[in-house]
Image (cartoon, rainbow, N blue to C red; front, top):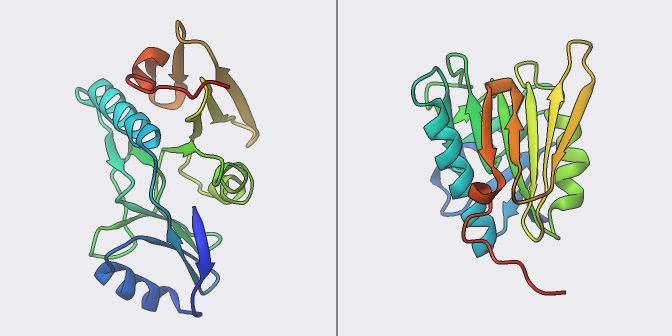
Length: 192
């Protein structure tokens, strides 16, 4: 999630600085927002998702990227780092640096207490403006919950929530099913 905003920049100034920076920042409306570090649970979930989805796609067209690949929401100008990204078409990038994807198929976000409101609200609203995007997946790190929002033909979004360990989360836009036990492998929840 973001911390205090810095100075106003153009998108090109942001990209120049970001490519040299020792830490990642989001960019929106001229402001940069440093990305905070992630918990052990967050990292385990992201690794598990990337591994499972990647293995499912290896015999088909589709690439899976970790949070080091930036995504641009062209309609709003947001530059952000989803926790994982799938692209099933030929990847399209903003420029020849090939580090800013503009045509994701599926975006994954792992929610924490500090990012959940932003990820569900402003960020999700902006993600929905990406024409190529077919699915957004929100994964809660402190309890069993995978929410998949699938774009319908009429532009609406259909929610499918998976909440038990013996189920599989269905990522319908890419025809991938991942057992919840694999998504949450080695994740330990705090007792209430």
